[in-house]
Amino acid sequence: MEKVLAGVKVLDFGRFIAGPFCAALLADFGADVIRVDRVGGSEDRYVMPVTGEGEGAFFLQVNRNKRSMTLNLEAEESRDVLRRLLQTADIVVANMPPRTIASLGLDYRSLCEVKPDIILTASSAFGSDPVVRDRVGFDGVGQAMSGAVHMAGFPDQPIKAMVPVVDFATGMSCAFGTVMALYERRLSGRGQEVDASLLRTALNFSSGSLIEEALLKVGRAATANRSPNYGPSDIYKVKDGWIIVQVVGAPMFKRWVRLMDKPELLEDPRFEDDAKRGENGAVLSDMMGRWCAQRTRQEALATLERARIPAGPVYSPSQVLDDDIVRGSGAFEWTRYPGVSEEVPLVASPVSLSRTPPRIERRAPRTGEHTDEVLAEVGYSTSDIGQLREQGVI
Image (cartoon, rainbow, N blue to C red):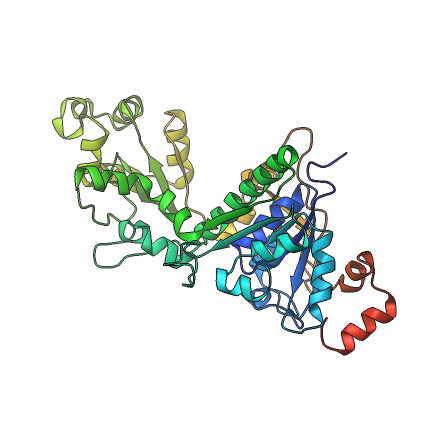
């Protein structure tokens, strides 16, 4: 089966999540992605270690389907290697500050001098505007500066999401932008730069609250897990754990009222629309909380499902891995990795295609696992490769 991006070559200089995840998504659909590692291994490889050699959990997830070569970009001798690699590439992925990209010769102008139709996908913390482009930041900074952390948690204790939602969403946006640039190149024959930032991604997530504040000056405060915009919508304790329930819109609220057997709520002006139900959500959450406390998770969820009210269990990571519905959804690709006795549950691409679906066919590479193979493909002989290794270039 021909893959969508078969024949597309990507040089991945990405680090941590946003850049590497973008490249992994391209690889899932058939692109030949070469991760360019530092000699000895790049720093993002060892965050949250889970293997015998210290590779991290996120590293295994966002570097599947890639080959790895090492290259010391600070060595003068690396310039010829980089040039040869670029001459065969369609896309360069690099998520780092623009100043760093330029110092490595990976800025768009430098790339175009080598290959005029190349596409550079460059995400950063704050974007390419001169005022902010050299600032550094991670996922949590984007969350915090977007207003999201203020809205979460409690008034005296803001709480960020402990999963890197902004990083992963930025990676998905970058993959989308990269494919758009490839599509446009078929018409124009020209490459371009795909720009994204963690902050812009995070601001998109918070856009509803930002627009509301700009127009209505409501001054929202944190309400923990309870929605300020509709209700009841909260996380509730049941006899054997926790569940989330979300009631949005008049039809769903009417069904919830019938379930609670409290028809008088439909005539109560405090609950006449979503906005009012959000404002008075504490009252609704108290009612829902008492109902949940009398039931097991299974009982509560089954009853809510019959009433067609969105609800779900609050799972720990181990419960996610053990859940029959999650496993049955095809979400995991179980993969072997050297130094790990158990199979690694890589999560499949978040999007699929019916005729040309994505595939995870290759585990994340070990540092420099394919250096000789990649260099041979761009014309280096065995002796040339040996000399580069002696010089510390690879």
